[in-house]
Image (spheres, helix red, strand yellow):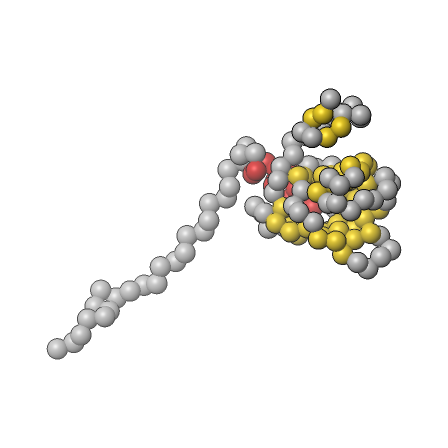
Length: 139
Protein backbone atom coordinates (compact mmCIF):
# COMPACT_ATOMS: atom_id res chain seq x y z
CA UNK A 1 0.00 0.00 0.00
CA UNK A 2 1.26 3.49 -0.77
CA UNK A 3 0.53 6.95 0.51
CA UNK A 4 1.09 9.79 -1.96
CA UNK A 5 3.33 7.54 -4.03
CA UNK A 6 5.54 6.60 -1.08
CA UNK A 7 5.96 3.16 0.34
CA UNK A 8 4.23 2.66 3.65
CA UNK A 9 7.01 0.48 5.10
CA UNK A 10 7.41 2.84 8.05
CA UNK A 11 4.51 3.86 10.28
CA UNK A 12 3.29 7.43 9.72
CA UNK A 13 5.00 10.03 11.88
CA UNK A 14 2.76 11.92 14.29
CA UNK A 15 3.19 15.68 13.84
CA UNK A 16 3.90 17.79 16.92
CA UNK A 17 2.54 20.97 15.36
CA UNK A 18 1.42 22.60 12.15
CA UNK A 19 3.67 22.72 9.10
CA UNK A 20 3.71 25.50 6.55
CA UNK A 21 5.36 26.16 3.18
CA UNK A 22 6.72 29.60 3.95
CA UNK A 23 10.37 29.86 2.95
CA UNK A 24 11.77 32.16 0.29
CA UNK A 25 15.30 30.75 0.00
CA UNK A 26 17.15 27.86 1.55
CA UNK A 27 20.68 26.51 1.31
CA UNK A 28 22.20 23.58 3.14
CA UNK A 29 25.75 22.34 3.44
CA UNK A 30 27.17 19.17 4.89
CA UNK A 31 29.02 20.09 8.07
CA UNK A 32 32.76 19.98 7.42
CA UNK A 33 32.38 20.57 3.65
CA UNK A 34 32.31 23.81 1.68
CA UNK A 35 29.83 22.82 -1.04
CA UNK A 36 26.39 24.40 -0.72
CA UNK A 37 23.28 22.60 -1.89
CA UNK A 38 20.38 24.70 -3.15
CA UNK A 39 17.02 22.98 -2.75
CA UNK A 40 13.31 23.65 -3.25
CA UNK A 41 11.59 25.39 -0.35
CA UNK A 42 10.43 22.78 2.19
CA UNK A 43 7.66 22.63 4.73
CA UNK A 44 8.54 24.10 8.09
CA UNK A 45 7.65 23.45 11.73
CA UNK A 46 9.09 24.73 14.99
CA UNK A 47 11.13 21.54 15.40
CA UNK A 48 12.44 21.10 11.87
CA UNK A 49 11.49 20.69 8.22
CA UNK A 50 11.22 18.28 5.32
CA UNK A 51 13.59 19.30 2.53
CA UNK A 52 12.85 18.10 -1.01
CA UNK A 53 16.16 16.97 -2.52
CA UNK A 54 17.35 14.06 -4.62
CA UNK A 55 20.60 14.00 -2.66
CA UNK A 56 20.78 11.40 0.09
CA UNK A 57 22.25 11.93 3.55
CA UNK A 58 22.71 9.30 6.25
CA UNK A 59 20.42 9.53 9.27
CA UNK A 60 22.30 11.38 12.00
CA UNK A 61 24.25 13.58 9.54
CA UNK A 62 24.64 17.16 10.75
CA UNK A 63 23.96 19.92 8.23
CA UNK A 64 24.30 23.70 8.30
CA UNK A 65 21.06 25.35 7.29
CA UNK A 66 20.22 28.90 6.19
CA UNK A 67 16.79 30.10 5.10
CA UNK A 68 14.63 33.20 4.78
CA UNK A 69 11.03 33.26 5.97
CA UNK A 70 8.52 34.62 3.45
CA UNK A 71 6.15 36.66 5.61
CA UNK A 72 8.46 38.01 8.31
CA UNK A 73 11.57 38.24 6.13
CA UNK A 74 13.67 36.80 8.96
CA UNK A 75 16.96 35.12 8.02
CA UNK A 76 17.65 31.98 10.04
CA UNK A 77 20.98 30.17 10.35
CA UNK A 78 21.19 26.99 12.39
CA UNK A 79 22.42 23.42 12.42
CA UNK A 80 20.16 20.44 11.93
CA UNK A 81 20.33 16.66 12.13
CA UNK A 82 18.94 14.33 9.48
CA UNK A 83 16.21 12.26 11.14
CA UNK A 84 14.96 10.38 8.09
CA UNK A 85 15.93 10.13 4.44
CA UNK A 86 13.58 9.11 1.62
CA UNK A 87 15.82 8.35 -1.37
CA UNK A 88 14.96 10.52 -4.35
CA UNK A 89 12.33 12.46 -2.36
CA UNK A 90 14.02 14.34 0.47
CA UNK A 91 15.17 14.48 4.06
CA UNK A 92 13.47 15.23 7.37
CA UNK A 93 15.68 17.31 9.64
CA UNK A 94 15.44 18.48 13.23
CA UNK A 95 16.94 21.80 14.31
CA UNK A 96 19.93 21.69 16.66
CA UNK A 97 20.53 24.65 18.98
CA UNK A 98 18.05 26.94 17.24
CA UNK A 99 18.47 30.44 18.73
CA UNK A 100 15.48 31.66 20.78
CA UNK A 101 14.92 34.65 18.47
CA UNK A 102 14.83 32.32 15.43
CA UNK A 103 12.29 30.09 17.19
CA UNK A 104 10.16 33.14 17.91
CA UNK A 105 10.25 34.19 14.23
CA UNK A 106 9.38 30.67 13.04
CA UNK A 107 6.41 30.55 15.42
CA UNK A 108 5.27 33.93 14.13
CA UNK A 109 5.66 32.77 10.51
CA UNK A 110 3.56 29.67 11.19
CA UNK A 111 0.91 31.74 12.95
CA UNK A 112 0.77 34.22 10.07
CA UNK A 113 0.67 31.41 7.48
CA UNK A 114 -2.18 29.63 9.19
CA UNK A 115 -4.11 32.90 9.53
CA UNK A 116 -4.41 32.88 13.31
CA UNK A 117 -2.67 36.21 13.77
CA UNK A 118 -3.47 39.42 11.96
CA UNK A 119 -0.58 40.88 10.04
CA UNK A 120 0.71 44.21 11.22
CA UNK A 121 -0.81 47.06 9.24
CA UNK A 122 1.69 48.67 6.91
CA UNK A 123 2.67 52.13 8.01
CA UNK A 124 0.96 54.89 6.13
CA UNK A 125 3.30 56.85 3.97
CA UNK A 126 3.36 60.53 4.63
CA UNK A 127 1.94 62.46 1.72
CA UNK A 128 4.05 65.33 0.59
CA UNK A 129 2.48 68.61 1.50
CA UNK A 130 1.32 70.12 -1.74
CA UNK A 131 0.40 73.76 -2.04
CA UNK A 132 -3.06 74.33 -3.54
CA UNK A 133 -1.38 76.59 -6.05
CA UNK A 134 1.35 74.13 -6.97
CA UNK A 135 1.56 73.51 -10.67
CA UNK A 136 -0.57 76.57 -11.55
CA UNK A 137 0.94 79.26 -13.66
CA UNK A 138 1.13 82.77 -12.35
CA UNK A 139 -0.27 85.53 -14.53
